[in-house]
Image 1 (cartoon, rainbow, N blue to C red):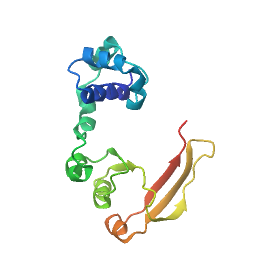
Image 2: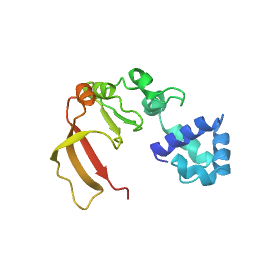
Image 3: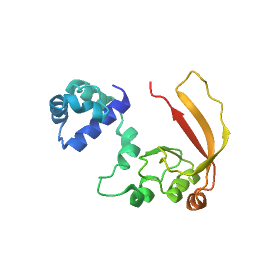
Image 4: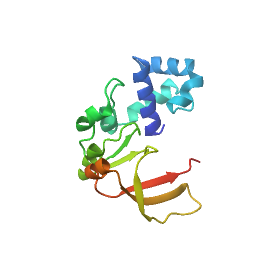
Length: 165
């Protein structure tokens, strides 16, 4: 079982309030039609799940699980706690665009991936080369033009559009 599938199954169990692998398996079977929305293709068998847990060291999930917060706390308030390590790739929902915090992530040597809001003000500074037959539709360097945005994130950014296959 791929590590990412194992992680999604563990998150599913946590969000579903499951207390054991048996609970996770039963819940997945009962909600088979909804698993797609959780990023899972099919219920995971208990034996496969247990084997995968036994083969993997728990440390591989430490950074990812540390960053999870409940829906009652906005990410903006949690940024100092969530993004403290360098050399990582952080993924945020587009509802979160605090440019001062995003720039702090870059300054510490990490990368942020997010979807831009449709009203983000920017100018394209140059196009980057990419294969025409691949998943990338465009890859451009941009600079933010809004006064507040530019003040808090003064460096160029990269805007990539891609096609899911």
